Amino acid sequence: MEPERIEQSDLSEVILNENTDTNTQDRKSLRRPKRVLHFSDGDLEEYSDDDTDTPETNKAADEIDPKTLTWLPWAWHRTTYISGKLLDGCDCVGEWLASFFGITAPKYQFEINEFYRLQALENEMQHKQDLEMAGWTEPTKTNLVNNV
View 1: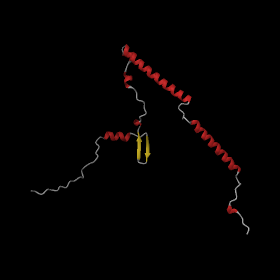
View 2 (view 1 turned 180 degrees about the vertical axis):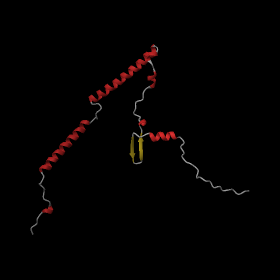
View 3 (view 1 turned 90 degrees about the vertical axis):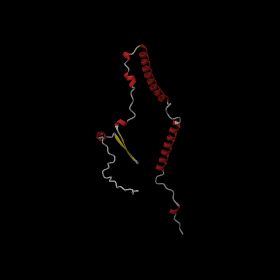
View 4 (view 1 turned 120 degrees about the horizontal axis):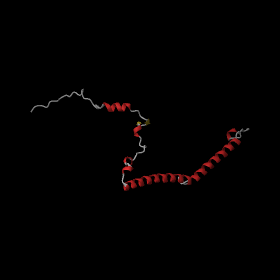
């Protein structure tokens, strides 16, 4: 049996994390973050395409041309369109009515307001009393003079 040969490997030519796609590097370097949020555990960069609050359009409804539809699909398309608009209108009116009648206010908001009013009144009375008593102090026991 032949003794096992121990080979030494030269790792000087090994390249780690090689990225051959230079287009993505150029694109990343050209993108500027919309804002940078700094946290204790690192930074977060927000780009403009990261927004999730942008409304998504209904592409299926945009692709339908009502002029090319027959009578029944056209009626269904118009019915769903009008009912959607009617629902949006009812939602808007409902929010306004809820705000008008105070349904959206906290249940015990009047109690909270009364507490803050009484607290402000008490602070005002304390302030007036402090102004009246300014300069008048009670003698303390350490200020007594004993004639012996």
